[in-house]
Image (cartoon, rainbow, N blue to C red):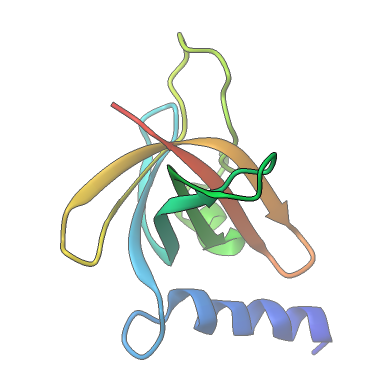
Length: 128
């Protein structure tokens, strides 16, 4: 087994272990309406750094990280999630709960697949 194959298998333990690890339930919904219940990393923070001044500012940055092989298994035949700029098109959507149990829905605005080890990171924006 090559090191990349081993790294992808380890990624499954790192991202998807919700018992002893940091895995968290995440629902992914394609523009077509197809959905998948996955486990990965999620973040939703409210303090950012202003790149012009270096000062902390109030804002919202939500992200997820999912295993590509889990996405393609759960949603066969579909592309990986990506940002859709048109407002008249349905976006890729992501839903997860915070540590207090409140659920939030976001749309994917930026997708960064790392096909070397098989992880997809996405930047999200609140979705109504």
